[in-house]
Image (cartoon, rainbow, N blue to C red; front, top):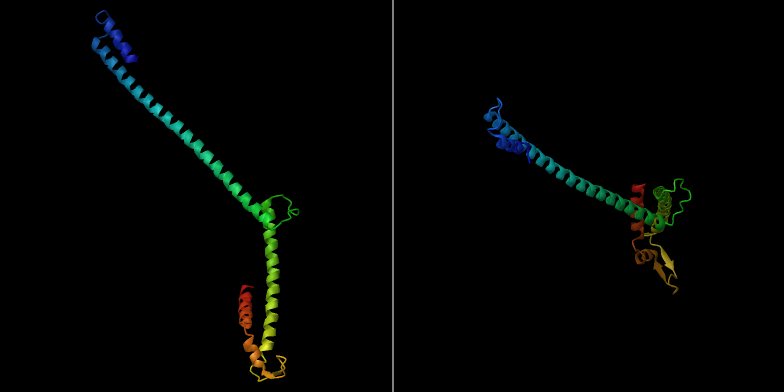
Length: 187
């Protein structure tokens, strides 16, 4: 029961019995003001209840977001761990040299070692291509000189040396020249 309702009930019980200088209209005005205040308090309580519900809803949403972040973080960590483990096992890494014991440090070291090995191998391939190019250039220098090869097919006949190049030209010279040009561009 609100304060205004109690005050109105008091007025009904004692109306006409109050023998004091307070006028009935002033009492009714006070009751009306108390009723207005009760209504405002009710509205405010409703607003507070709505805000409490909003706070509870936000707490639930925040807990869900926190769980989603934790799940995503765990899944991302698992994904990286799986990738690092694959890299580690795929290349048979020995991580005994890593001080931290961290797989990422080990894989990074393995990648550096692999790149250094590739640079070394690449240099060896360029050198081999340069040698092959010189040898092919040396052989092709005989082409077009009208040289004869005797007993090439073990039949005692002579045959033009140019025919050897024509019969055995599988594009090796062009392939070596092209590969060497590309390799030198990459260096």
